[in-house]
Length: 125
Image (cartoon, one colour):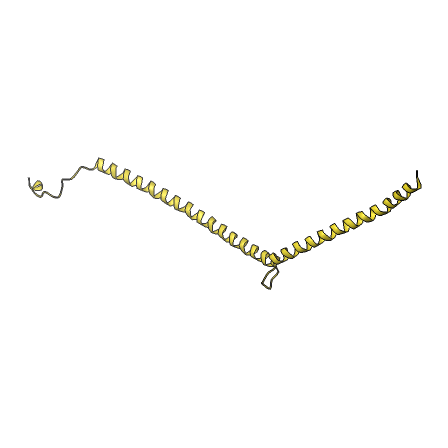
């Protein structure tokens, strides 16, 4: 191999890693800037004007909401029990009414009919 080519090859071997390192350094700096910018945007969106930390406030709201849901479930259970009781009462009243109607019908069949009260002459004849 010619000594000139050996020098060029040695120079390339020395320059390439430095060039790669420089390019990677520029890309890394650009990526870090983007991450910094994005982080600043996230902080701005998450920043709270309240004295409490956002996570603490969110957890407290979640706990309060779960407490409300528990209360709603309890109320719905109680209302369901009340509705079941009302259905039983209505069914019982309906059965009682049917029995009363049957008794009245039986009485009407077994009891002779009286004359109407509107005509007093009927009693005198």
